[in-house]
Each structure stands twice: as structure tokens, then as C-alpha cells.
Length: 201
Image (cartoon, rainbow, N blue to C red; front, side, top):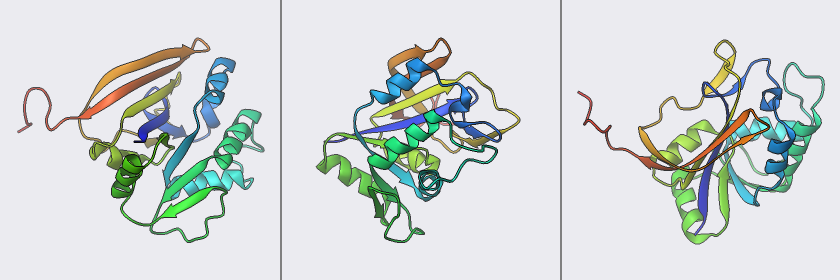
């Protein structure tokens, strides 16, 4: 049976990106980059918006405000290009142009449930906030990992990650610090029917 990891890179205040900020908020360091390079092979799951963004990067489109990719960003995109990817969308058309990408038009929750039960190895989300939310609500997520970068993007932050989430209890299973400033926390999640003091009025 496959394991499903929801994996986020965030600002301290829970944004997935920020206008005018480079990838990794420009704060990645050698320890963090080395750790990224050590990650096990995974099949990446994403929605249409993330696919359009990341496949554009793979085709050479540069993020707004940048003249070119930094080496760290280019290496990250290259690694994703080589990896297996499953894209859930009713709006995209086949064939997908990004290498090693498969399009699934059906219900993402049921498709991932089938992938988990019939496969092996690691399934990991990338971006795709609504997909991650749906998979968590369905109780399919085995591990929930957040790497927090030491910046608050209150004025420029985009894509608030946790809006619309259910209440979730988190059991910490790993934590570490990279380069003296980047914090990783990893949890086993459990979706709650109600908060500890009962159902809100």
C-alpha cells in the first residue's frame, strides 16, 4: 500500500508564496538543499493550476519579477520533470506536454484512494491547495509535512494554505532545523469531527 504525504513549503504565517518573493523566499541554504536531494523517489500529485505553473517553469517561463531562474530553482524544476506526476483536472487536455505526466479526469479522492490501495512507494502532493484539502478531509493523508521559512508575508502573501480546512489533530513524528533558520515539522494527521470541548453552537 502506498503512503500519502502532503508536503508544504510556507512562510511562518502560512502562505504558499508571496508577490515579489523568489522561490524558497530566497532563504534556502546548503543543509536544506542537501536534504531535498536526499528525498526518496515519489509520484507527485497535483491539480491543474499547479500543473500549469510548474510545467510553464519547465518550459522556460520565469516567475514574475525575475530575469532568470536561480540555480536552486532550476534544479528543483528539473527534478520534478524527471519524476512521475499525476494531474487531476477536468479542464486540461491530453496529451500533457510536461514529461512523465498522466491526466486523471475522475474524482481525485477516489482515484488517490485506489492508487494507495493498489500501489506501493510514496505519493506526494506538490502545491495544489484544494487537492490537499480534499485528500485530508477524506482521511487519506498519512503524513503532513511543513517546511517553514523565517519570513512573514502579511502584506504580500498569496495562497493562504489552511483556509477551509477541517479541525485536525497533529501528532508530531519528526522535526529538524536547517541552516539555523528553516524549520521542518512533520505530523501524523487525524481529522476531528468536532473540537475537544464539543460541537460549536
